[in-house]
Length: 100
Image 1 (cartoon, one colour):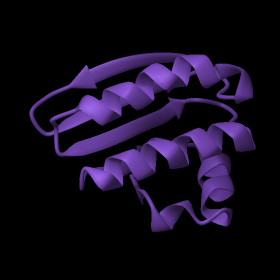
Image 2 (cartoon, rainbow, N blue to C red):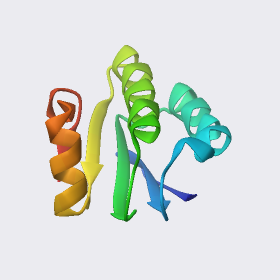
Image 3 (cartoon, rainbow, N blue to C red):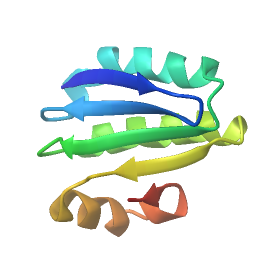
């Protein structure tokens, strides 16, 4: 997994490229710290270039969600494939994130 950050006054977008798995925990910790410090009102994970995600990665997204919710940020999943969207919604992610 690689992460590119795009930011504007409205949102901070984390563009995830490549498979997102348990092996990415250290890399994701930086994302978590950025969410903790962010001033933009919306946190977005762009998964358009993420072909697969395991359950550990989904757990990392839930931790980021909790941090963002504590800051009252809007939480968005953008561009996920149909299969990833189905996987996340089967786990109840629509309760925590808006899907675009």
